[in-house]
Length: 138
Image 1 (cartoon, helix red, strand yellow):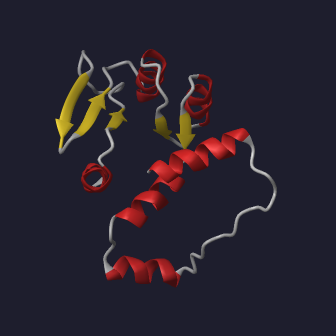
Image 2 (cartoon, rainbow, N blue to C red):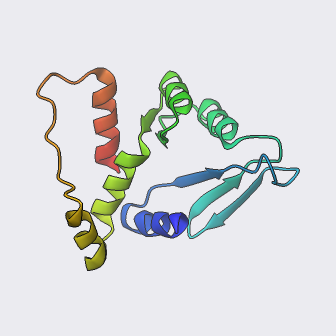
């Protein structure tokens, strides 16, 4: 379901997307990569966690990545590598704005009173500005 949503999102936005899954407990001896609907899918090798693969990717390719993660360690590594981490929750909101949802999902959201919060009026930090800039690209 995640990959299907990302494929739809990629059709709309055209971004290069890489998804990394853990294979450290029951993966293959070698790291496995494939492409599905234009999405690069990586499974870490047995004994290696996806976190290590993500850190290696953003460290080795010195460009500004937008790293979607709710893991604090990966987010900190992304900042130190010149990339911008976006929380999974913020990314999901961004994707939901771009991909039309079914009427049932809208009713479900309204049922629980999910309202949009207003921002804090104080001046944002450099990191907050970077996150906002990255989210505007998504």
